Length: 207
Ligand SMILES: [Fe+2]
Image 1 (spheres, protein in one colour):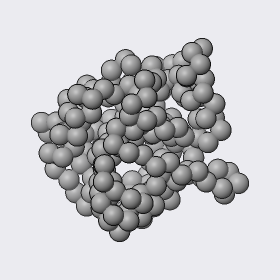
Image 2 (cartoon, rainbow, N blue to C red):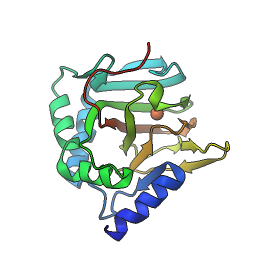
Image 3 (cartoon, helix red, strand yellow):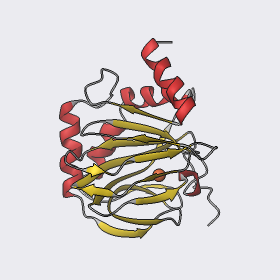
C-alpha cells in the first residue's frame, strides 16, 4: 500500500480519527470544488437544532442535502445534486476506503451543513446511535475565522484527542468513537458533514 495511506490508516486505527490538511496532496477536494461546496452551504435553507439526531444536546444551524431517517433520501433543493456529485467522486471514496481499511463499496447516507456560532457546540454523542451501519463521518471545514470548536474524539479509557480544522481541511472519524464539538469561542465554525456506510438499504436504528 502507498505509504501516505498507511500513515493515515495507522492514525485512524490509533485515534479513530484523522485530519487531512487542505493543501496536503492526499486531500481529495480541490480548490474549485471547495468553493462550490461553500456556496451551496451558504445558500441552502437552515434550521436551528437543539436536540441532535442521536438525542444529544446541541446548539447549531443545519442545512440538509441528504437525510437518513428511514433510508437515504436526497433533499429537494437547488444544491443537493451538486454537493452529492462532488462528494461521490471516485477520488473521495477511494481515499475513505483506504483510510478505513474497507474493500467493499461505500455509500453516502447523510449529508448536511452544520454551522456553530459563538457560544454554541455539538454535544457528546455516538454517530452509530443515528444509524448502526455508519462507518465513518467525514467533515470538510468551511469556516475560516473561528476559535474553539474543537473536534474532540474519546478513547475507551476516557482520554481524548482534539482535532482543530481550518478552511478546507478534511476530518474522517470512525462512527464507533464518541465525540463532541467544543464550544465555539469566536467566529463561526462551518462544516459540511457526510456519513458513509457499506449498507445502502433501510436505516436499522431502533427508534
Ligand atoms: Fe457526530
